[in-house]
Image (cartoon, rainbow, N blue to C red; front, side, top):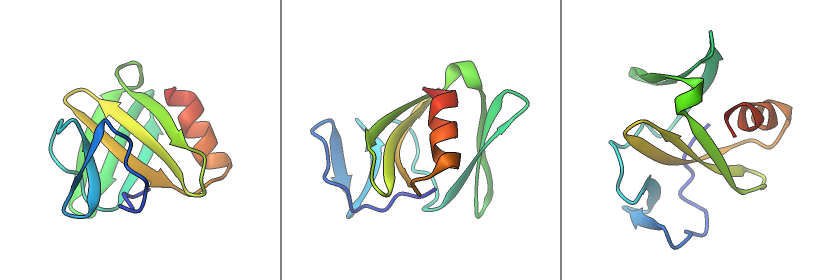
Length: 100
């Protein structure tokens, strides 16, 4: 999953350096490409440099912004909110259902 920077920016987002990154400037920017995994009822986010973070599933929210393809969604974790894009398909739908 990754931030494409190619979406129409909803009013609550701001454009930073051509990439849509933060919801109201919350949290540090994540790597351009991240992997989201549900492991033992935790969401684990990792990137090229290693693990970005791990949070309990009940503290994480995902809200679809567009159905794509690609699917764009806001992922909110404690201290951060990121606008991400992922390929449309069963894996993305399952993840969004689990985190919705």
